Length: 209
Image 1 (cartoon, helix red, strand yellow):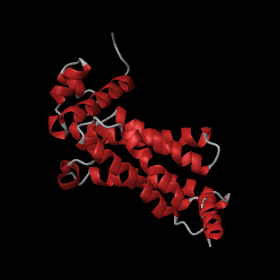
Image 2 (cartoon, rainbow, N blue to C red):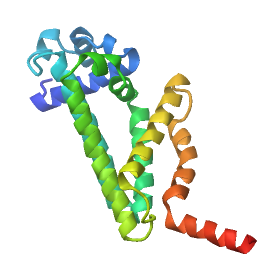
Image 3 (tube, rainbow, N blue to C red):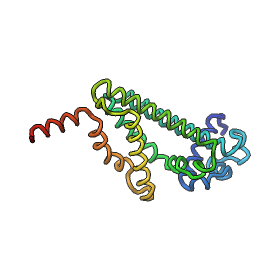
Image 4 (tube, rainbow, N blue to C red):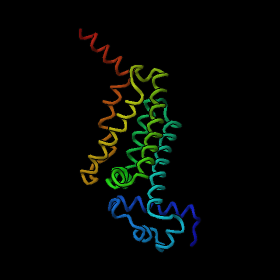
């Protein structure tokens, strides 16, 4: 069966992420990718010049997946806070389905040796941050999120909760539910930024004074 160039590139990227999830970046070779896809190693080079190009495309696809999650949440949510929660859950599920994502993004090889990949990662994170900040600003404008909240700090905290959940998931040898780990932090996050929660707290203090 013959496949189009785009389909074959998709297969190579999917196989690469799967292999990174199993063996880390050190286990990613063109021979292993070819075996996973079911093609010859020479055929890999019909679609990618080298392993660096495969990694670059993989990072691009991860960014596209995160962007898609944001778009889905925006279209289906009832408001900014609900939208943030949906993005949070979709992100955790996305990582749980693709354990190669954190192993790639947290790889020492990327951060210490690969100067070409770091700008790509920074651009991906910056784009994601921008999307989160826009949602937060929307929440401030419609009165769901406190005016004193800093959108950038709120977005960074959001990503930090995801990173902590991922680290705990990895250290448990992937036995914990990453979604449950993340959601255990969510209520406290909302309590820090939500107008309605703050009003409830103020009313409670008044009734107790």
